[in-house]
Image 1: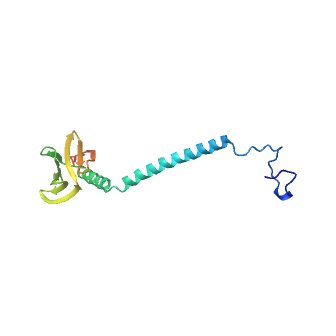
Image 2 (image 1 turned 90 degrees about the vertical axis):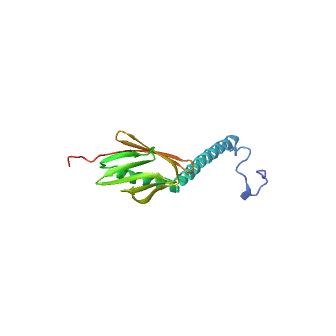
Image 3 (image 1 turned 135 degrees about the horizontal axis):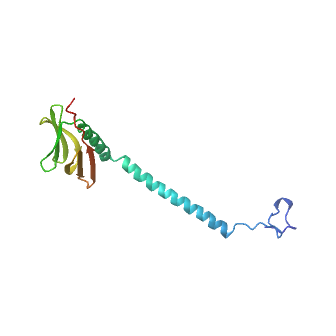
Length: 162
């Protein structure tokens, strides 16, 4: 920086001995560091949330579970009767003159209509437990990967007066 009297006119500094400009201060640095740290924390929280959401969205077992729940719920609407099979490893639904058994078979849950056929409903199942509590069917499933899921469905019975 040139002294004011010795610099050419184009190179004069605005911060001379009488200038009130203090320059970059320690307080400015702390303020900018605080803003940067807050930005980093929010970015980290967002990236963590995005990674967890992406993991849930791409989990095929979650989609398979929801499809199974919806199909099971459809069978429990307007039922003539519902019974638990064996030691709670299956359920038998009587509806419209046919009997649908939904039961564990090996490492899957299968559906059989009138003791015929074999339709896979849910795969990679380690154990299941069906239980009846009044008009509520409770199902607990343990998958091979250790994940546990539980669902409860209301059973609606066909009105005998119709």
